[in-house]
Amino acid sequence: MNVFRVVSDVICPWCYIGKRRLEAALRQLPDTTEVSVSWHPFQLNPGMPPLGMDKKEYCVRKFGSWARCEELFAQMNEVGKAVGIEFRFDKQPIIPNTFDAHRVIWFAGQEGAQDQIVEALFNAYLCEGVNLSRRSELIQVCEEAGLERNRIERLLRSNEGAAEVLAEEREAKNLGTTAVPLFIIQDRVALSGAQPPEAILQAFAQTQKQYPELWPNI
View (cartoon, rainbow, N blue to C red):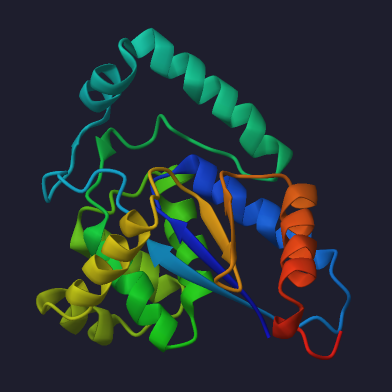
């Protein structure tokens, strides 16, 4: 089994683009290639207030001016369209706290539904303007993506998954991760950024060459 671990945050447009590019790369592998993709947490804003903060205020603090932010949004829109994503940065005025979203992604991994939940959360925030800081909206997105509503409600009322998410974030930071997405292949080769499919395939081939013991049948 070929294992891709992806470290990301659901408010990161580059992470959504990276997901599309990874999917494009995997489609180019032989049909007989077995691949497992798992998603792991990295909060871009770990100190974000529970209900998030005003997007304009956040962006001006980070990039210096709102005009600069709008330039970046326009550039990102063009990159997104190239991989089939229609970003709508204008729809949601809040930058959310994503800790609960990461707990749900962790839970979805136990249920074998992680990819569909990650896809739904990316699309909800970045394209539909859903405020993921609001648990009611987060629950609705996850229910529509296939998880049981009552189970997610119980998860969010408890601390379930919190320790696991924090532990995975510490692990990522201990590896020196400062930006996402980060693709880790077979726990051996790491590829940082929303790389094009060709770069992902090259890293995959590099892993096979450097660590042949991981592919005894090749």
